[in-house]
Length: 246
Image (cartoon, rainbow, N blue to C red; front, top):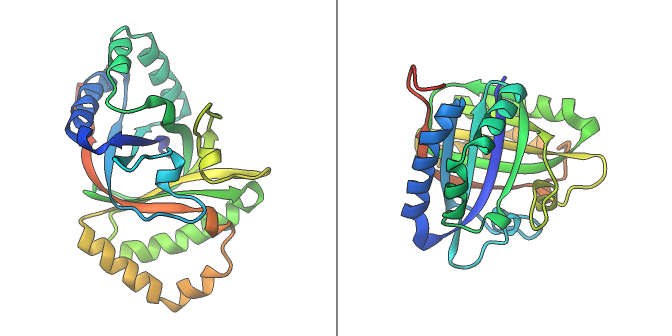
């Protein structure tokens, strides 16, 4: 299944267009290195959390907006080859020197998908990051499969659950700090793609009213207080055209 490189970034709100241009320029290079898909999502409906949140994950300032983004690869091996080619290209140094955000606060890591259902691309995305005990992986997957069937019934286009595989510790921020991960826990990076925000809003209303979902709420195989989530507008969604990948 899909191998995911996940990112969370704090971008000065005034730099939205500059960030989008930088992402577009980046994709022009990344497709040469073998990237399968690149998605950049700008915060639209992202709540503050008491314990964790997207803003806390990247120490976002009041004048900054959170970006939730990911790269899709065929496998860990193709991701590693992509990174090696990318880091060896001299054009990346110039790109890195002109980023319209504070790269020291960017959170990133590699995740192996354990559930990837649906197809198509959606302009509105729900993003999730959460800690799950390693021993609860099977129970978490079972819960995700149940939720996925309901989300698709209510209009979701695609749902991906990706299990931490190459998630480094950072000097300032990282995924484990973001969810206050404890010993024996891993990090899950997940998203749902929707055709639009109204469909997403209606679906969540139906999900929250579902008796089965309410029954599962008290038996979640992870600490829901340390999960954070939010809704995002996809401002860039790129896949190489046939013949464009090197």
